[in-house]
Image 1 (cartoon, rainbow, N blue to C red):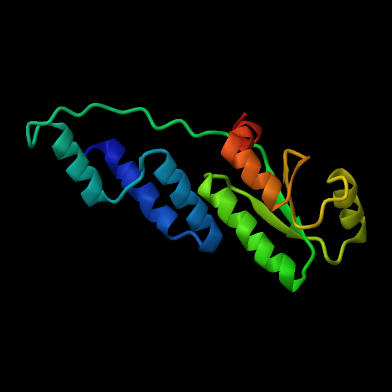
Image 2: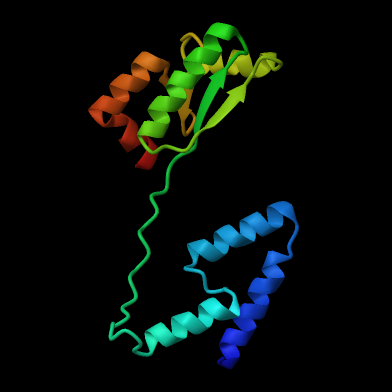
Length: 155
């Protein structure tokens, strides 16, 4: 095993011993970078593959470009009818590949006032993209079908 592979294998072993959330974040970062840290067997297998075993030329492919998105927040007040509506909004956002946060403002009168003010009185739940109100389900469906939602979220 090459000296660099030994260091990478030891770093991978140390990363596997991290506790809880730290291990999860380290593994995600390692995956996002193309698994530069791996166990000794995987590194040896990669080296053998890269050096001609199997007569395959190894060509590095650029990682797919991640689309940056504006923050998307669904605000609601905890009521039975709103919980169903939040699920429908979540389905629309997920179907469009949008990462979002759901925020319950039941216990925050100041947030309720601000959301109602900024949404121009629309019924909750409402969706905000980068601080701008898109609206409720009807407005979200219209924005998604016209392509406007994607423009707002992904620029």
